[in-house]
Length: 171
Image 1 (cartoon, rainbow, N blue to C red):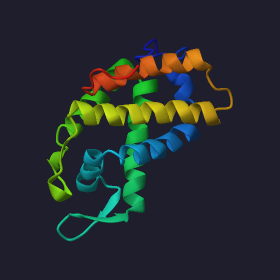
Image 2 (cartoon, rainbow, N blue to C red):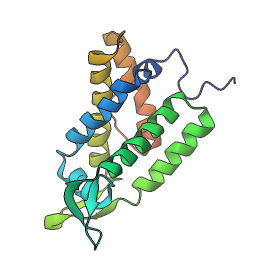
Image 3 (tube, rainbow, N blue to C red):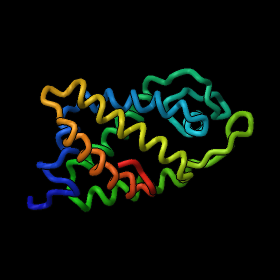
Image 4 (tube, helix red, strand yellow):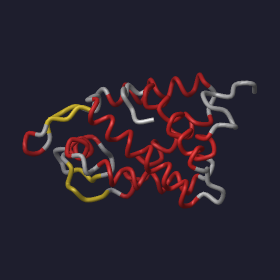
């Protein structure tokens, strides 16, 4: 009580995330867009639960339904906590995810080097998420924000991206 978190109920970001069906859809849309960035695809192959693993722990390229549900659940919990949670929870969530991203480094197939802290990779993934959340909101929310509200959402969403280590994020 009394802690409105980072955004509060009158924010555009609350409005975007209050329709959780669209939010879930946005996570799938963003994942598809993110995979178009080769370094992100390599990182997901090596570090994500989305794919089944062979005996050596390498991705088989086959979808793991249970792993996908776990990953989507973690991501959804993170964003809902950041949007609706009290400030102390939001800050802890961001520190935790930033620490997890700090361990996502390696060399993928064909020698492609990836690092989740690389500003270009981060910016691509951030922009994919922001666009997916805004677009699914506009298309599927029963009472979507107008263009000014969507612009406000983009500006508010940068606070999360910056807390995760992003810079020069599109607002």
